[in-house]
Amino acid sequence: MNQHQKIIFIFLDGVGIGRKDKRYNPFFADNFPALFTLFGNSMLHIRSAWREGRDLSVVPVNTTLGVPGLPQSGTGQAAMLTGINAPQIVGRHFGPYLYSSLKPLVKEKNIFRSLRDLKKKPYYANAFPRQFFDYLSKGGKMSAITYAWLSAGYRLLGEEAIIDGRGLSADMTNERWRSLGYPDMPVITAREGGKRLVNLSDDYHFVFYEYFLTDHAGHTQSMEEGVRVLKNVDEFIGGVLDTFDTAEMLLVLFSDHGNLEDMSTKSHTRNPVPLVAFGREHSRLTARVRKLTDIVPALLDGMK
Image (cartoon, rainbow, N blue to C red; front, side):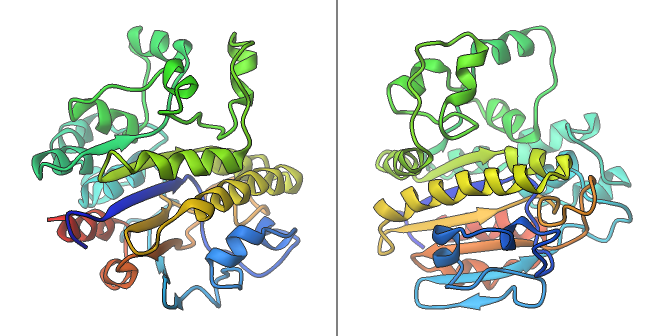
């Protein structure tokens, strides 16, 4: 990696590597052509989780970090963002929000601040409705990712960023904004959303996009909902691949814990999560990552 490389990081909340069983794993319950292509023309499952090709490498990543219990988003995302074993510090897995004693750690050590210190330009592509800003103004809790971005000195995007094409809705298509009091918000396809994400890399070194509906779908135990959400993800990835330059860009797909891959339970899982790296110098990243805390040090070293 060098200063000219662009990294697009897609965070898919709650996506682990499960069994090859269409009764419980929505990845095998329907067809997802873009994901199938991205994964090397074979869906990932627990007995086939490693891939290596010209433009692609995939490795399974441990999220338990030596701590008993089920991984959770608060400590998992803190560990992912900082490279420090947050569950071990707390003494347990904790979520969905940040454990209070972890906030100083995330503030000082998160990847967005580290990139800023390296004179790189990160971008958090998610845009939020006014209700979210009202919620925060009243002391509402925020995810580790949102906290990391704000504590690094950056601002969150609002509705105007979606309209101008500078930001993306958390649902990829803007459909949910209609019910939030935005009747004129233009709805786009998930594929167009993927193209927009790639285009944002024209002005930034590191573009981060967070999608939480995969985790939400896993908690429903509804295979129909799981497939519906994955169809959206698949179309979004298709848009990314339509406009992606493997010679200059690195696409990273990652998660904080398992959930969606096992609809037999409403809870998170201990399954490993996939690190999917596609594009420039992909194997240099995956060669260094085996656990949740490895991803940020590997990314930062490659961008120095």
